Amino acid sequence: MAPPKEHIATRTQHPSTSDLWETAPCPVIVVDRAGTVVDLNPAAGSLLDRAVPGGALTAAAPAWLTRAHGQTAAVPAARPAGDDPVPAARRPAFRGRIGARSFEAHPVPHRNGDVVWWLVDDTGRRLAEDDLATERKRTDFLAEASNTLLASLNTDRCMQVTAQLASRHLADAAVVVLPASGRKLPVAYAVEGGAAVRATVTADPAQVPGLSEALQGFPPVPSRWIDPASLPDWLIPEGFGGTVGSAAVTPLPGHGVPAGVLVLLRGAGSAEFNESEEVFARLFAARAGAALSAARLYAEQSGITRTLMRDLLPPSLNRVNGVEFAGGYRPAAAQDRVGGDFYDVHPGSTSEDASLAVLGDVCGKGLEAAVLTGKIRNTLQALTPMGGDHERMLRLLNGALLNSHHTRFATLVLASVRREASRVRLRLTSAGHPAPLVIRNDGRVEEVDTRGTLVGALPRIEARTVETDLLPGETCLLYTDGVTEARGGPLGDELFGEERLMRAVSECAGMPGTAVVERVQMLASQWLHDGRHDDMALVAITAPPSTHLSAVDGHTRGRYTA
Image 1: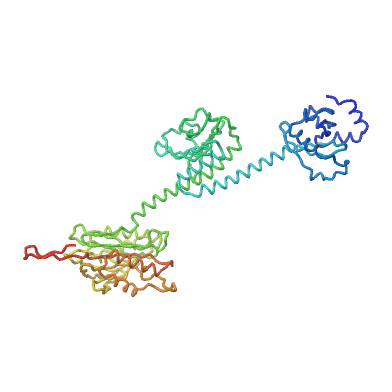
Image 2: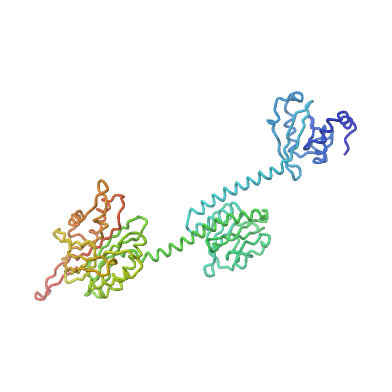
C-alpha cells in the first residue's frame, strides 16, 4: 500500500535523512505514543507487510511487539533526541518471533514521545544458543548416566537404570532387551515418570524390524523405517498410554560382543525421532552397553571364582571315625578368601583305618600361593591310599612339585589318626614345618620331635615320623608359622612367638578342639591389632572324653563310650 502524500512530502524535504532511512541495516519502525505507525523503512515494510504510516501497530505487528510498545510508551516522555538519560546499551530489549524468524526489538525514544523500534534478526544466534543449551543438557545427562550406570555391577540393576534414564530423557518409554537365554529374552521396561520393571519374555526378536540384527551388533535401523503398528504387544510397556507414534531400535555395544538393545518409544502425540536425537541415543547406548557388558563380565567371573573357590577353601571339620577334628583359617589380606595355608582331613575307608590329616604352608600368599595350594591338596588326595607311608607320600609330592612350572616350595605336617578304644594313636611327620604340640590333661604341652626337609625345593627330601597317643580329652595342635610370626604387641613389632603360644595352649587343657582353635585365633588377633600378618591355619585333633563301663557280666572286658 502506498504511503499518504503527506508522508511522501515529509520524506522529500530531508533527502539526506531519506538516504539513511533507506540503507538502515535492519527493519525500523517509528510508532507514536498512541500506537500509530508514524514511519517505517522498506525493510520493515517487507517484514510487516500490513504496517503503513498512519495505521495501527496492533493491526500489523505481533502481539509481543504491541505489548512492548505499550510498556515503553507508558514511560514519561523522554528528553529531546540526543539528550536521552538512558544509554542505548542499558535500554531493555524485547524478544519474540515474526513468522519463522526471531527478533530483538530495541526501543529508542524520539521527539514528541515517538518510539523508534529497531528490529534485529537474532534467529541464527538464538538457534546457536538453543543448540548449545541442548548440548550442555545432553553432556550433563551423559555424565550423570555414566556415573549412575557404573555405580553397580549387577546386571538386573544396570538394565533397570538404563531403561529408566532413557524413558526420562530420550523417549516416552524405553525397553532394554538382552541377548536370549535359550528361547527367553531378559527385558526391562520403563515408562516416563515410573519405575523400571524387570521381566523375562518368550518371543521372537525377528518380529521387530532391526531387533534381531541389533542383538548381533549390527548398526541401528533408522526410526523412519520402523512401522509402529507392527510392534508386538510384548514390546509395549504396561502403563504406556495411547498408541506408539514412532520407535527407534539402538544396539548396546559391549566389550567385543553386543550387550543388548535399547528400544525407544514415543506416543502418537509426540514428535518423531530426528537424526540428532538418534545420534544422541547412540551415545547414551554406548555408555549403557559398556556398563551392561562390565556387569555381565563381572557376573561370569564371579561365578567362575565361586566355583573354583569351593575347592580351594579349607573344609569344615568335625568328628571322623570317633576322633574330633577342628580347624581355623585366617588369610593374610581381608579381601582374600584363600591363600598359601591349607588343611585337609581324609577319612579312612573304614572306622578301623587311619584318617590322614594334612596341614601345610606354601611360600608366599595371595592367588598364586592359592593355586599351588590347590595342586598340593589334589596331589595329596590322590596319594591317600599310601597314607601309611608318610615318607613315600612326601617324596612323590616333592617330585610332582619339582616337575611343575611353579618355583615355590611348601612345608607340611602329616598326621595319621586312628581311634583305638579310648585312645587316639597318632603318626606325625613334619616336612620343614613347625612341630605339632600335644596338650596333656595336666596342662603340660609337649612338642612332638618330628622334623624333615621342605618339599618342592630339593631333589631329595628327608623326614622323620614320630608316634604318640592321646588320652581322652587331650589334643594335638597343628599350626602354621603365621601364628608364631604374627607381629604386634604394645609397640607393634614383637613376634607372638612359640613360648607365648605354648603358654596359651597350656591353659586349654581338657578343652574341646574347637575351643582350643578359637582361643589361639583370638589371642593372635588381639596381638596383631590391625597389623599386617601372614596366613594363619590351625588344626586340632582331640581324643573325645569317654566313660569306662564295667563288664556287664562281671567277667568280660569293659569298653569305653564317647
